Image (cartoon, rainbow over all chains, first blue to last red; front, side):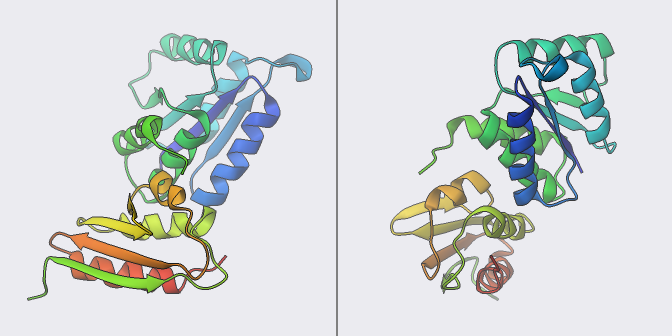
Amino acid sequence: MVGIVLVSHSFELARGLAALTSQLAGNEVHVEPAGGGPNGSLGTTDDTVRSAIARADCGQGVVVLADLGSSILTVRHLLEEDRGNGHVRLVDAPFVEGAIAAAVMSSAGQGLEDVVRAAEEARGARKF
Amino acid sequence: MAPENSEVRVALPSTVALHARPAANFVRTAMRFRSRLTVAVDGKVADAKSILAVLALGATGGTVLRLSAEGEDAPAALDALAACVTGLLE
């Protein structure tokens, strides 16, 4: 299944969203939080994101969602450094809705392109 | 030959809202089929394969859902979706 990585400035925000997302998607989808800076501060670190991507990767691709601002920069920096083959993808999507849409799509056994599309389509989703 | 466009009405179990885990189970069932599938409640229509659209319906326990299917496997999709709805657990 396609793995999901949730990058936030806040450890708690990433952890909480991972828990919510896993409740909907089930345990088969690897949803990995990557939140917070050194010593419990707000921020993001390369190491936290890199290890979350490694944990999420089951060989079928990884979709990365980030909260805002420098979280995006951290992920971009890592992906450029890794010069990967495109199997790790940062998507431009709302954090909560994008994570849920991506993870449920992955839990149905869909591939990386479908999971990316589900996350991106969340930009236009209404809550009610 | 079964019709390619069909519709059924089915009620959610009285204690199960179409939210969180039940909604995800519903959407995963819909994704097994090729047909275009929709679920409608009180005039609101959602793509049955979109978790965000299904959650936005806000369907509460006991609500009657109108399930529609369009496509080659429409009858099988509706059978499966209706069975999924009646069997949903919290």
